[in-house]
Length: 364
Image 1: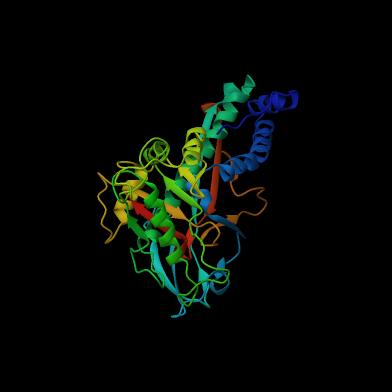
Image 2: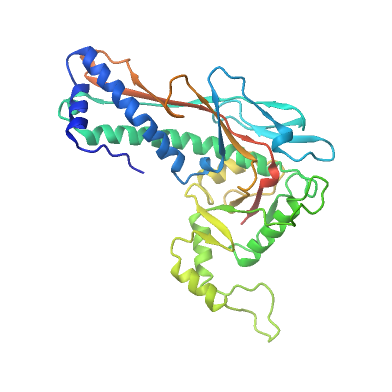
């Protein structure tokens, strides 16, 4: 991910004006750069392949009293209640609330921010690369915070998942062994079908469907998928008496040629470096696992998400006059003597899961 400012005469002149000794001229130029690059930073964040972007964005004005009509977003269960998972503060432990399906859901938002500065001399020399790197770093810091808050909600909702056909913790299955095999993915698809029942626990209109569109995995799991090209894939003894069976030639050929593995078994494979034994997201899941049997040091969690449901929501508050979700402002804390130019970026958002049937997982 990189933000680049083109080296045109107008852009160079604008960057030089940021370092002007005339305070008013310098501030106007800094504000112009913030207005120019703020929407670019927002676009970069929203198009990045991250856990945070599994959530659907809903925008509200700053003076609104944001809410959701649950009966429009969620099938009414036989008890006429739904479970909602949300955070009150950034990085806080998400908690579960039970709401009548006809209620308006009120939720909390919080501010994620980033403040950066660079020496004024770089502006005077028209170092557009320094300005670009500053806004790139701002996008990275905001994305890092968004990733953690988003995964907190995902992990908590997965652990407490409680649907008509599965009780709390039953949205997660155990792998057959220490490596991912086709049988594990097959079992996950079956589990997702059971979870995705109609509101009376029966077959949904249009027939049952596989409720997994995306699977969040570690690089080690992607290694296991690639290994299916040359390792046995069966879990039962073949009728001929042999104990191992290779994958079909067509499947092996696909695995050989698809280095990036964008999808497998009809499921989008999302490789996340923070997942895997000993990694950040694995430790977060261990902290919220509740009664789920999970050993962080030797096991890892794989999370399946059904993005066809409007279950994962990200409410965003838009400031008045803001041109994007991320509001970029000139940081005026620096005096002339400090020779610094600073920028401050903030986004006010929340993370909400209103339908835990969109989540299932594998403990490997």
